[in-house]
Length: 290
Image (cartoon, rainbow, N blue to C red; front, side, top):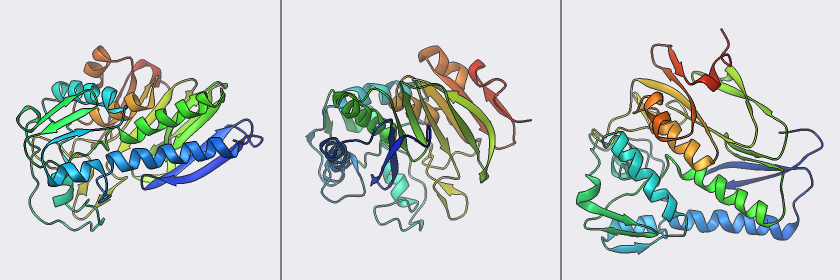
C-alpha cells in the first residue's frame, strides 16, 4: 500500500482479510508470532467458534478470565454505553444471531429484534474478568478488529519494526512514514470514493451499514435499546491515535453526535446520513468531493 518497494504480508484472520506492509520483508519468526496473536484473539473473543470464551459465556453464566486486552476494552465500551444511553453495547450478540448474523452465517431472520439486556443487570466487567448472572452473547464487533490491529502493531514494534501499515480489511494503522492518502469508500458503491484523507501516525476506521447487510433492510449495526438496525446514518469514519478507539468511535457515530464524542475523545470524524447529508470535524473539512 505505501509503495511498490514495500513488502506485503497478507493473511486471513477473524473472518476477514489482512495485510501488513513494511519496508523490508518480515522474518518468519515474527510472521508466526503475528498469526499466533490472531489465533489467540479469535479463541477468546469470537462468537463464531464453539471453543471460544465468548461461546462458553453464552451457554453458562459465571466468571471468565479474558486476555489482557480486555482491561482496556471494557472501560471503552462502558464509556460509550453510557454516552449512547445503552444504544452501543457489547451485549447485542443475541439480537444479531436472531436476525441472521449467527455462527453459521445463515443470514435468515429467526425472530423479532431483541433489545440487549441492561449491562448492570447481567454483567460485571472488571479488568480482564467478566462475570455474568445469565447467559449472554457478547459481541465486540464494534471495536474488536481495531483492537486486533493495535495488538499486531505491538508485535511489530516488539520485533523492532518501526515503520508499517496494518490493514485489517480497511481498518488502518499507519506508523513511521509520510502521510498516506486514503480514499473514503462510497457507502453505496465500493468502486467509488466520496473523498480522500491523509493518514500519518494515526488510525482510520470506518463503519457502514452496507458492509454486512442482508434480507430486507437488515445489517450489523444494531441499536442496543431496540435490537433493530440503525436507519439514520449509513457510513462513518473516525481517526484517532489507536485503532481500537477509531473502530469503536466509528460505530459510536451511528448513535452519538460526533461533536459530543469529540468532547470525550481526541478524535476526528465524519458521518454520512441516509438523506445524503454529512457532518464532520475540522480535519475532514475539504476532504470530500463535491
